[in-house]
Length: 488
Image (cartoon, rainbow, N blue to C red; front, top):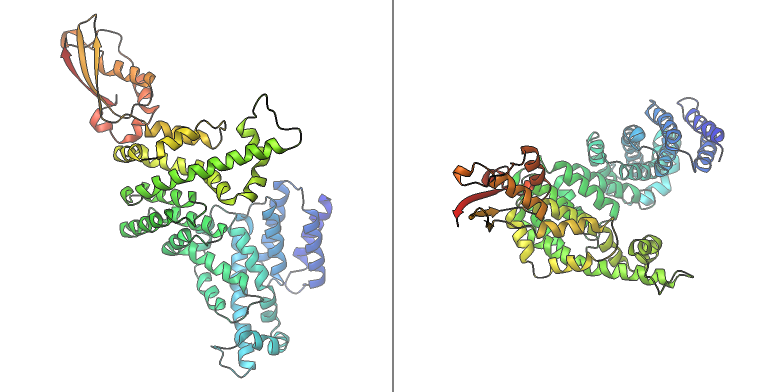
């Protein structure tokens, strides 16, 4: 790797695509050198190069933008920030798509067919494309470079968290891509058709829901669909949210769906933004319960793969599960893809369910009443792994939270007793602190005569568990419980 050679290649590529100075051979050579020399560069160097390439893409009349676009995509794949060049790329793609469509229409006319079609476009282009390109070079270059621009746009949209917002900053692009997508040609246009579907998902909430619910959808498209649902969850109307939750609940029960974590994340956000939890809770609980056995098979396979490695099996002391998983995860995922996806999505699914259960006593009751969920969670919690299973273990605590339970608190020395109703209590330390906050007071009024806990201590105890998120603050007050005195 040569930093100087890389920087020179970037400068040469930008210069060789300037309007009026373009040289496709020089630009192609510079692009190859750039790709060869960019391995191992740090992010600041990649971002600086992206800024230069973005400036070239934004230049009015730039020639051979596909070479600039492919260079940008390569730098983004190696760690560069996609936001730097994404908007100039999408602007250039929109212009090139118009020119490419004009090229197709001109080829139809040259073949004696209406510009509007329909036509055997592949045959028209093969027979008349060279002549059209000679007459209108800009259109010809747009057609030749269209596939590369689409590939670059797809790669960069798939790597930015702002994909939805950035795509929607170009509102005319989806319709233009759809017009090209129906052209009857299959050597240049497959990458455009993939991009067209991606843009529809990023621009349209129902399309995003359908892509998310499609078990055949490519992984990158499903990720972007989930991002689009999250983006729109707060602004779509209540009917659209409920329709989306029904659709996602239906698909959570589809065994063909390998990675349910994206659907459960979308459900979490839709409910948080006002959707009806009851529409999806049963399907969510069932799917999580069904995810645990294949995830357990994955861990067992990682243990076996680890032990089979040369010199790694230790009969006297079994290895830590986390060590086994880190060492063998990718190999096992290739052998057992369904089990691997179950493991990969388990932590996220648990996090989403924690968010939903924390806000609803009724949902926690439903989780506790589920015939298999809690037992499977508790059994899998014994696996010695921390990154994924920390969320599973906390979920167990949330499911087991006591809700609306009555306790009798007795103090034999004072010959007093208290009937207390608690909700959202996770552990004894929290209970003791909250009891102190609720029961200590003026003995003349029947309360226990001790030093009262401070407001800070009571709030800390209340918020350390799931009670704060249970929506019971108004009912139980700051302490999270109601107390009534009984004399003994």
